[in-house]
Image (cartoon, rainbow, N blue to C red; front, side, top):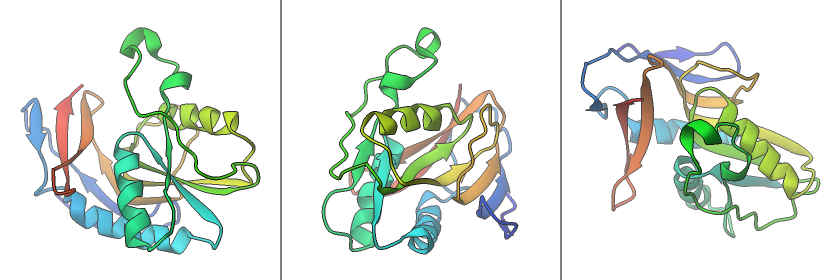
Length: 191
């Protein structure tokens, strides 16, 4: 897998192409190192932070990331967690997903919100998350940082920072996993 820096503005990060292995669930920890990408995300989030920025993770992968980022950045308090479940536009196809409820431990009105997610794909989850966020108030600024941008957008959504950009066939999904020690890894699964 080739990984090259992407210095052409947002989204920033590394670019890679994953080959189709034919397996239905392929661990790709060696080809796409989730822990190394987390360190790149940490670096990128540091550059995006302002004194009044609130980190908000999209359930579930983004919630895992934001919990660790909050600690690694030395931020006080709890990070926000946001669910897309109530605003999804694909109930008929996916059903109601069980996910953590939204918890925003700050006043959303006028807030500087940095959304974090594990994988950016069609943009539909982020659209649903924005609807959920606005149910809690009117933020002053909302930005997005992701661990991986896999392309394939169906809506005009872009991350201000992506630790990596990859190409992945539409028939496959990229899933972030977390072990019992909190270490991250990726798996490619057939959709």
